[in-house]
Amino acid sequence: MPYVDKLYEQNYLEYASYVIKDRAIPDVDDGLKPVQRRILHSLAEVDDGKFHKVANIVGNTMKYHPHGDQSIEGALIVLAQKDYLIEKQGNFGNIFTGDEASAARYIECRLTDLARDVLLNKSITEYVDTYDSRNKEPVVFPAKIPLLLILGTEGIAVGMSTKILPHNFCEVLEAQIAVLKRNRFKLYPDFPTGGQIDVSEYNDGNGKVLTRAVLDTKDPKRIVVRELPSGFTSESLITSIEDASKKGKLKISSIADYTTEAVEIDIHLARGIQSKDTVDALYAFTGCESSATASLLAIKDDRPHIMNVTEVVKHSTDKLLDILKAELKLEERELSDRLHAKTLEQIFIENRIYKEIEEQETSEDVNQSVIDGLKPFAKVIKREVTDEDVATLLRIPIRRISLYDINKAHEEMVEIRKRLRQVRKHLKTLKDYAISYLEGLLKKHGKQFPRKTEIVSMKQVDVRDAAQRNLVLKYDSSRGYLGYDISGATQFEVSPYDRVLVIKKTGTWSVQDAPDRLFVDKGMLFCGFVDPERIYTLLYRDEKGNPCLKRFQIDKFILKKGYDLVPAGCKPIKLTTERNMSVVVDYKPKPRVRVVQEKFDCEEFLLKGNRAKGVRLANREVKSGKFVSGE
Image (tube, rainbow, N blue to C red; front, side, top):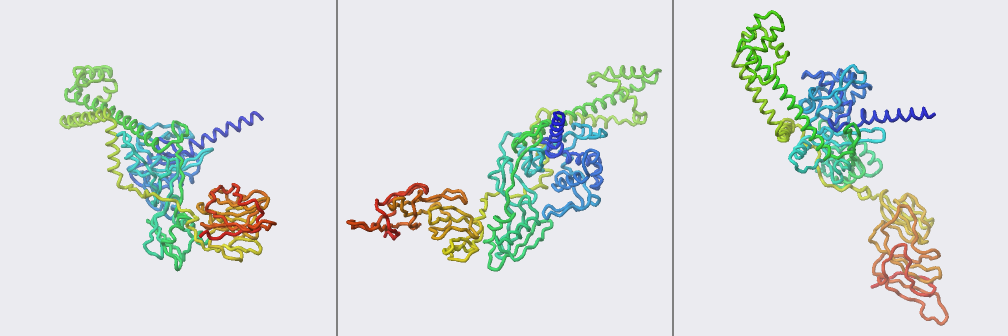
């Protein structure tokens, strides 16, 4: 058994680690999950500028992804729908209606210019063996921008999950520029379906946002949905509206979906209903208003980390500097090698060093004659001449030597030196170069990605405020029942979301959701909506029969929990919520006692907590009492 326990523990840990790192959670460096990275690597592998069948890309990606083709196809379509890294051709579905994409054999895709600009560079990408060791795949792409924030993603792993909301491309790049300039910045989500968003509780990527559909209410008899809230399609939004209508929470006569490339859901209202009176109900009872929770979890340094938006931008900007430096260093090395090769070629041809090899008999002598011929030009060459350099010179064909253009070669070397000086200048002023690089990306690609979601300040609509009070609450005093599904004396109109305060004749009280049928006993003292400002005045007799008066408010309670207004053994007589009242108390007659009635001004008594005892009015047994106007 210990062996089995150890085996289960080890296997579970390996499984959990695999799901977290290689399936569900994206890497902060390039913002991609493994399947997305493998799809883009496969697209880069076959990239020739033309469109490729999605089915072919899926098949090619299976060399790298050890799971089914369905998971690859689904991930490719979702990534393509974001319009950042994959260019689409054909029916890739509709994010507004929720329509599915056509079969993979009918649709085509290729890398976008943006993907080529910010993601791909084989020379500085680290590769590892694939699952079958037959191919190589990238560990992460050298992404120059925070794709983690731009794309947004969600995933569920073992014991953890992530939900990163998408952000606007231009705003993210401007935030990177702000980091390089040591300026402050704030980033907020931008959803592809548009809509409105309240970011007051976003908490830098680890809070929540309130999203709303954009409603056109110009026509008083109909409402048109122009933009969708996050997480909804036109179909799912219509379903939520129809469900609310069936439950009587709003009144509509018909609903039609004209959504294609833009959202247009036409809601015709019932007769006598105005659009301005229906907006709050749409926000309260349908998907027209929804809350989206964000949790920014990503793989960083090979481990899952909870981060925030600011940390991701700063991390990506540091990576940008590292990547640009590596690219510049690589270009500097390549330019230096080209300049060295061009210099050797120029000296070799212009000074006719190749003539010296004609008299040599062995390959060693030939090599040595070339090296000796180049020695006088050591100051110009500036590098040690290697055997590889000599071999390169000896491979120059005679035809090329005879057609050698000195002026053209000189111009090429001038251009190489010019570019080399620029590269070295960029290396010295790396931050300025990074800023100009980001500004170039904004100029080239920024117009394609305007902000779609409007940032507004909004207050979440309370369903109780938006609900229509079309139910009549009644009280059957003969049987002691209260509700809107019984017959009896009408109390007031309620909605299913209203809360009703009930005070029974025994002095106990509770707050209930508006009941359809609830037993409250005969002789109910009070029934009404909860109002923290309302003042209640209660006359009751204590355990000895003496009259007591209590003034109180009800502002705190637990729903459906019973509370006592009077101590044990006491019995309520009368209750009122009117102000400026007096209470008239009638005492039981006693020999030689002439005063059998007294009047007290209720306003002279202090307010107390609803659980406190009342004030004793007299040490006499009370017969009855009533409240009268104090005026």
